[in-house]
Each structure stands twice: as C-alpha cells, then as structure tokens.
Image 1: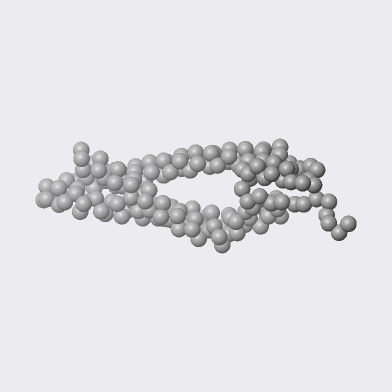
Image 2: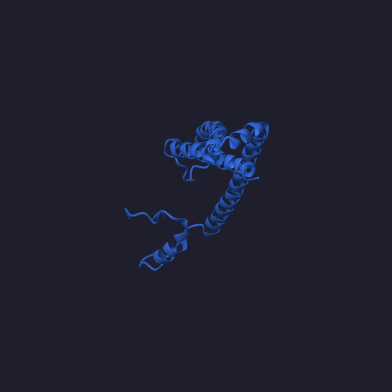
Amino acid sequence: NPLPDAFEIRVDDPRFLDDVAAKVARLPGVKTVDYGRDVARKLMALNQVVRVVGFVVLGLLFASTLLIVSNTIRLTVFARRKEIDIMQLVGAADWFIRWPFILEGMTQGLVGAAMAATLVDVSYRLVVPQLHKTVPFLPILAPSEVLPLLNLGLVGLGCAVGAVGSLISVNRHLNA
C-alpha cells in the first residue's frame, strides 16, 4: 500500500484544534484522531498566562517610566522656578515655557528607549537561534520580521512617555 497510514494536518490557529479534529473524525475512513488535546490545551493556557503577565509588566513599566520622567522634569522645573516666574511676569505664553521641558522629557524618553531597543535587539538575536534548537515546534518569528517595527515602536513610545511626563510636571507648576 503506497498510502501512509496517518495524515499530518497543521492548523494555523490553535483555537480551532477541536473543531478541525471533530471534522476530520467525521470523514469516511478515519478511524481515530490524535492531536494531543491535553498538551495543546496546556500550551494555550500557558500562552494566555504569559500574555497577561506580559501586559501587566508592560503596564507597570509604562507607569514607572512616566513617574520617573515626570519627577525628573519636576526637579528641573523646581530648579528653574524663578526663571519661569519671571517669564510669566513679562508675559511669556505657556507654550513658550512648556516646550523646552517637553523637549527635555522627549530626549530622556528617546535615550531610554534607544538603550532598551538595543538591549532587546541584541537579546532577541542571541536567544532566537538557541530557542529554535531547543524548542523547534514553537513558531518564533525571525529577527528581521520583528525587530524593525519593535525598535521603532519602542523609540516612539519612549518619546511619547517622555512628552506626557513632562506635560504633567510643567502643567502642575504653571497651573499652581
């Protein structure tokens, strides 16, 4: 018999494993369907836990970065409070006073994000080949597919967090 006694079917989305297995089991001539249901469910649960933990850690890092930038700019505003008061007395617009501090916060965010992007880039390039050897069945994207957008996103988000943190600090002083 030149035909194999089993067929291997790949599913693009693991959420559809049960549906595909049920449909294949109903096909004529199919005796049993074995797809490692328990292992697949455990891997999907682990994946969900990793995603939730990742989002929580990302939120905490975002909040802490915002707090650090905001406090750093607050110290800068405090150190220059006499200059800011004089500028307000002579009629300087609030935007004219805000922009140097916003640019400083964006610069801080840019430098921090650039350091983080470099660390992520180097780590990903070192870890992915080892991960492919250790766990070959995991679909891991190549560095060239992930890193350009990720690095750009990190730098953009760093600048945005720096600007928001600066706005918070400067607005507190100007509105006080």
